[in-house]
Length: 305
Image (cartoon, rainbow, N blue to C red; front, side):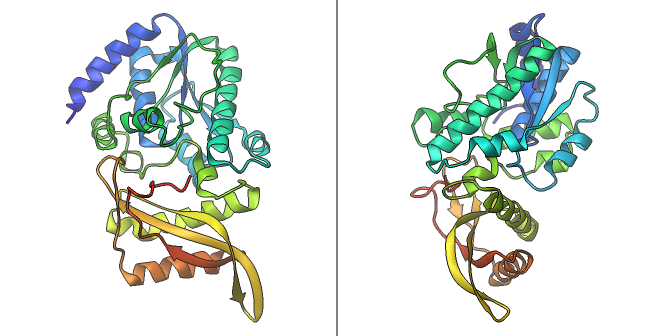
């Protein structure tokens, strides 16, 4: 297990050496990985760092507002509204790996655009150890690892937490006093809600996934899952009022894990599951049914794509 104090001291020194006199830019998503990477890098080089949060249109409910509040101490924080560009880039894309790579490429292009304005030569990322293992093992590509375009217009990539597991990153976050919302936040995939939608990530399906994920996170909080979320997996018939509808199927997933490398489906109480389905179907007119995923990892992955 990492010693948080020693890690921070060593990371600050290493980042300072890597970045030197260059300006740097960081991919800030609001998750614990990128938040720790951003904070440590900011301690290392201060105003040489421009933290950039890109609103991809694929983020959690309320994410942008949370970023503004949590990182208000970073005067150089930039918030980029790229929602339409990302959703346009995903139009017609159905293959999971193609979706990840399209998002990864658009992500980097957004940073390149911001980097030119700040003359940033270095890109800082929140890649953690399981990300690298899964990418190198061809389980899936991550937008900040295997999904990068072949030509990246930066002189170097700095990954402060690349050798840490998720629980170790959380320990460092507590040492940095980032606040409970960030420190204990459930993992959220780099490609965002696009991989919680089977097939094309349309605006309608992404909106359903966002609202459903919000419900699941709220209703499972007392059960302390490692990760809990919802995904839009297809369509089925249902009944709303007196009308027969053909609406979305939302799959709910809640797992227990240490590091995400393996996971067990959580045995949630029936009452909790019923509250989840009632809220999701009641708050979304275009959702016909809700199902619960009982598959462990392996054989399944935690996310659907």
